[in-house]
Image (cartoon, rainbow, N blue to C red):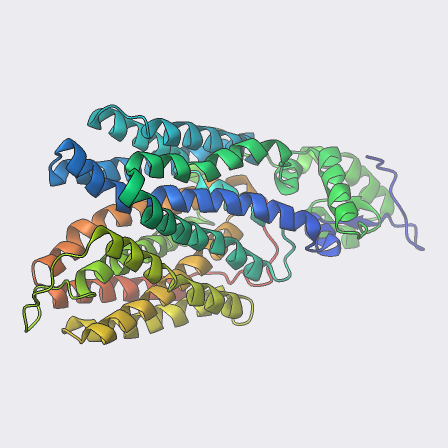
Length: 489
C-alpha cells in the first residue's frame, strides 16, 4: 500500500481508522455473503446439537441401552464442546479466523457423518464426542462475522445472525418428524450433517477478517480486503491511509513530520496476540476480569434457563405431568407427536428474536437483557403452581421467547466487549460455561419436576434469572454504538 498518503490544505496527512473505513463502506452485498456463510455454520451447529433430542431414545431401543448410557451420549457431546470452545477460540485468536473456520468445519462434518456408521455404542459415543469438539467452535463464526460489520446497526445484524440458530432447530425438528418414523436415526444423522459439509465446501470462498489482519500488522492485506468490500458494496474508502485508533487520536497533537514518522513505523505499534495460555490470562487481567466473571454468570444463567424451559415444556405440557391435583390418564405421546410438539415450540424463539432486534440498538444491550430477564421471570412465576394445560403452554412459550431474547443479546454483547486479540477465546469460554449449565440443568431442575417438586424447580429457575439480571446491571460498559477494541489495554 502506498504510504505517501493524501494531505489536506494544511499539509497534514489524511488518515482513517478501521472503524471509520467500515462505516464508509457500509453494510452491503459483501456483508450479506459473509452473513450467509456464518449463518450456515450457526445453523449446522444448531442442528447437530438439536439432534441429541431425537437419536437417544432410538439408539436406546435398538441397542438395549440403559438410561445412563443414553444420557452419556449427550454428556460426552457437551464435554467435547467444552474442549472445542477453548481450543478453537485460542486457535482463531492466534492463527486467524479462517484457520478456525476450516478446523471447526472439518472436524464437525467428518465426525458427524462417521457417527451415522457407528457399529456399536462405544464408537457412537466417541464419534459424537469428537463432533462435539467441532461444535464448540460456534463462536468463531459469530466473531468472524462481527468483525466485518460497521458499528451502525451492528446489534440488529448480530440478532439477524442469531436467527440462523433458530432456523436450524426448526429444520432439525422437521427432519426428525419426517425421517425418524420411516428411516431411523442413521439417516437423520446423515442428512443433518449436510449443512456441516456445505460450510466446509464453501470455506474456500471465505476471506480473513480485516480486523484480525490489522492487529497483526498486515496493513496491505487489510487495505486490499477493504477495497474489495467497497467495490462489492459500490462505495468508496475514505481518503488517506489506514491507522490504528490510538494514532488517529494522537494526530491532532503532533506535527506533520512527527505524523509521517509515526505512520512509517505503524507495524511496530500494533500488538499481536500471543499463543498459549496468555489469552486466558488476558481475560482475567485487571481491565477484563470483572466483565469476564459477570459474562460467565450471564451465559450460565441463559443456558440453564433456556434448556430448562425447553425440557419443562415436555414435562408440564401436553398432559404429561403426573403430579397435578388430578392424575391424567393420557398415554405417553407417540414419537410423531413428540416431534410435532418440538417443532411447534421452536417457533417461540421467533418473536424473541424480533423483540431482541427491536430493543438492542434502541435501548442498548444491558437494558434489553434486563427487560427480557424481567419478563421471563414474570412468565415463569405462576408455574410454581399447577396451571391448566393451555395456560401452562402459553407461559412456557412466553418464557422461552424472553430467554432466547436474552441469549441473543448476550451473544451480541460478549464479542463486542472483548478486544479482537482475545475475542473468540473470550466468547468461546463464556459459551463453554453455558454448556456446563446445559449439562447440569437436566440433572437438577428437571429431576425436581419429575419428582413432583415443581415449585422448587421453578424457584431455582427464578433464582438463576435474578442472579443473571443483577450481573447484567453490573456490566461496566454499554457497547451500543461503541467501536470495537483491538487489544487488551
